[in-house]
Length: 100
Image (cartoon, rainbow, N blue to C red; front, side, top):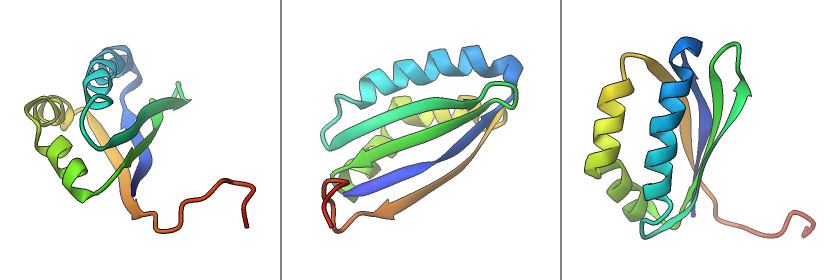
């Protein structure tokens, strides 16, 4: 499993429009093969900072999402108005939080 997480920074004046478009993309993305989780949560409204969390079954599924036309279009539209500090991690030992 791959975990994609980090922060997105959007000018607070653009935040409502960004969230509308991100929610539309998320709705489609959650239905894609290999998508486990695709979420964003407001971390700091005044700064326009969102916490991003995605989980994918494998790199093939993530790559398909990143190459999908709607994802590419979203990134193009927002690349000049938003910046991300997003990283990808391999999860090799997934277990319940209470398990040792």
